[in-house]
Image (cartoon, rainbow, N blue to C red):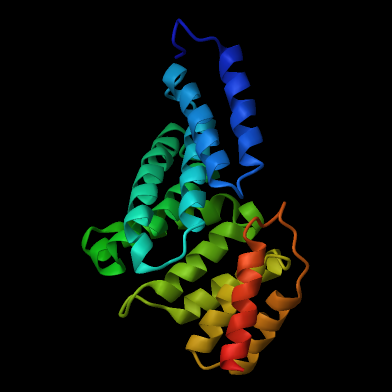
Length: 238
């Protein structure tokens, strides 16, 4: 229900403002401005599904902009935890909507970077991640350039033994790159999994694809970073 002091028209204006800021998400300050705009909607309409999942998406992106190094663990924990809150709210509001499940899972992954996989396992977060990402796959596995498949494939690669399952990882990531062949991150993730099981030639093939793909920042905002990672791994391993 809307606040008596705020009209639906005001919320539409804030949504447009937030979406405009999001288009410039390569800049941290623009992502933060988008979050502020979406939060204004929730002040008037706490049950707004779109605003909740878009805030979760923005917090994931803030975490995704950070290097995965020890110095950034606390920031990963903070943005992940905050994003999970909005993602979970979105899933409560609309259990059949893919966005809530997907961005909740992605934020949970960032939170895990901050607290460690072992801690996440003891807190039961692995099962939550699997539940929400598998639900996202059920709803639309090709959403966000096969994002749910890519995310679950990375999960099965990253999670520690004995839960690690590289067969599942490769299956998910192969399907992801087939569905979204222009996504550079997907090829890089698949190469990592191939390397882990000793499939060097298959890994090299994926890295070469990632290194050669044209950059499309509208489709993949972090494409340059993942292409650079692919080139560096090619030089290091081959």
